[in-house]
Length: 344
Ligand SMILES: [Mg+2]
Image 1 (cartoon, rainbow, N blue to C red):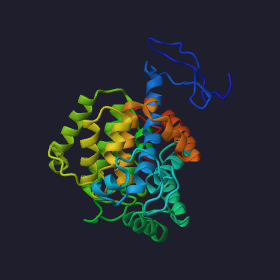
Image 2: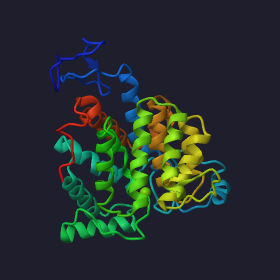
Image 3: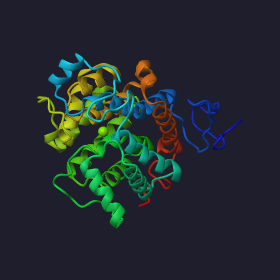
Image 4: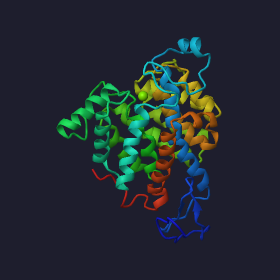
């Protein structure tokens, strides 16, 4: 037995469970007394789909960021490929801040093997020092404040209802899978490193819940009921009469993603429809890709997109998705108990 991170000691109706072959060819086993979900392969596929889907949506949408849907139609007909270009002059398959900030979170959690808010903030600061190709104004301001004053929570600001915290929720969703309280804590604390606004907080929590439900194989009707709960709580997120606004305002962003996710029937169809709406297309694409990837799994991500996506990004999203999933309460058997609570 090689590379076993833990000893096998499984309980439950399906044990003993054989060592499972990991996606990257690694062999791992699970040690704690936990009943492994019977659809472990699907959960792994959907977890990878969430993180890879975020990167794919970012790379697909970034070249048409700030364009209107009419301008996109005039230039591309329907944009279906990772073409690069746009105002950022990207290479085909290149990602932007949406994916890079998600990496900052994922790497910190992986390095600490647990929640590490300061580690995330340090990674944000190190990332900003690299002069990234794109960074939102709210994120830049808050990260600079952290660098100058060590603030781990940016003060409330009425203009902080942007989508910059929601766009990086994939790693938080994977890390907290199986514990809704942990999700809420982690979603809000990571969000407030840069964005402090109730609409951003709510969007992050519900997006995380939707990703949790999707990864665990729940139906689209079940996900729709969760969105109905969100709308009951915050009616401004209602999207039954979608106005076609796809801006960086987190309400517009979430409405765009909900509209296209619930009207389409596959990963490609959902992400293509979302980015062709234009506006903040890299981030709407990233969030749609995260949600659709979690729902449909890696099998539905088109091979031509996987081939075109920056290979380092594909490798790291895939690897970190698996590692974060293994840290999650669902896999560790520590749901609601010690070991994975936020540390600060
Ligand atoms: Mg971006």
